[in-house]
Image (cartoon, rainbow, N blue to C red; front, side, top):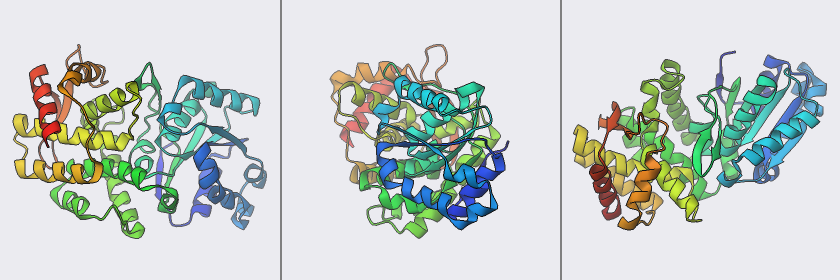
Length: 360
């Protein structure tokens, strides 16, 4: 079944239609402890609304709720097993459906749980964070963290429907909003100058949600176009990893040192690093590099590192899934929208990149 991505205009009707499209025998909803309290009431409104009369009423009124811990620290094998257990105890069959209501941790872990339970059941993503809307929920990547490494275990398997509704962003704090915006900035960098200028000028501290919804639609369109061309990341889909080789290393180091950071913050810092490599190796314009670096410093601050941590960051980069034969591969840019995948850098290059990051 082809994935449908819907920019929501009527959440009730869209949820009902997405469920009816699959016609499951049982319905399960996965939340974390935060989205259960803040976002589940909006979803319950869909089930209680009169439009459900057009569909399978019993499914709407008897869904099974599964709740796990919040934050990326809950994206573990233990949480995954808890979801599998709840599905089994709730009588899920191969014809059941899971709705993932939450941020990227929920859509990643829930998608993996659905993809593997009884060799795969249908699932819907309703992302409630900006990061999940523009990144995690779209494109079919699912998985969990394992042995301290981000998204180490998972599969490609797209949700049947993804419903994007910025009304959920009203429940989001400023830090999580900025986290998601980093992925939108990445999409602008791999797209065109006009899109990048809009993103650098947007007031993310006091966002206009109507304007942001259109920007979300544009951002998702960039990702959809690339994923459609390369669904399993054999080529151009690696463009979506801009900022992530360095960013995931920052994120993993932060977890090791018990100073966990939000994914989007790590990506923003990784963008500065990898745009520096882009400038030194591929001719990316220095003016654009400095503009983005300034925006990132003002919006995301800086992850404090010293040269004593360079070797560990380098080691963490060697675990990146884009690597081949132990060689670190980066996605770099020759200019905005000029994508250069499979770019290699030496250890000295990477240490120089980290020097630039610390000094800018």
